[in-house]
Amino acid sequence: MLMALTAKNKTSFINSSIPQPAIDYLLYGAWNRCNNMVDSWILNSVAWEIADSLLYISTTTEIWNDLRERFHQTNAPRIFKVRKALMALNQGAFDVNTYYTRHKILWDELKEFQPILICHCGMMKAWMEYQQKECVI
Image 1 (cartoon, helix red, strand yellow):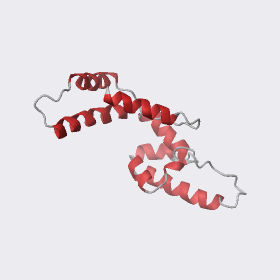
Image 2 (cartoon, rainbow, N blue to C red; image 1 turned 180 degrees about the vertical axis):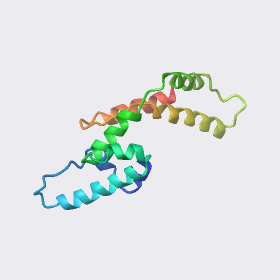
Image 3 (cartoon, helix red, strand yellow; image 1 turned 45 degrees about the horizontal axis):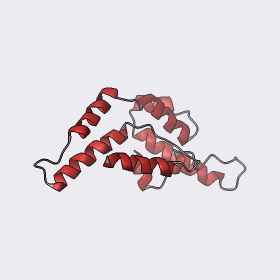
């Protein structure tokens, strides 16, 4: 879903970077149309039982946060297994492409278990640099 929202340049509606304006604001109508469009995409991508419970939530951000609270969970045993595989991975008989691909797959999977961070303070760049250094180590 995040991939589709990014492709359509609508992630701002789920991460609150375009907050709901006042009803009397000139562009409220345009914001409301976009918000409703993103809502409908999300509602149509989940099971109808889940969609029914989301129908009366007013903003896309609130819907997204509700879904994240319901379904985002840590998976400690899987995280342990991926970290263990990363520590055990060595090039050995693999060619560079195969080794790099296996390494990247494990790091990408590990990143999926990290919490979704929203930062407005500018520290995200430092955090991302730290994460990149971790991949090298």
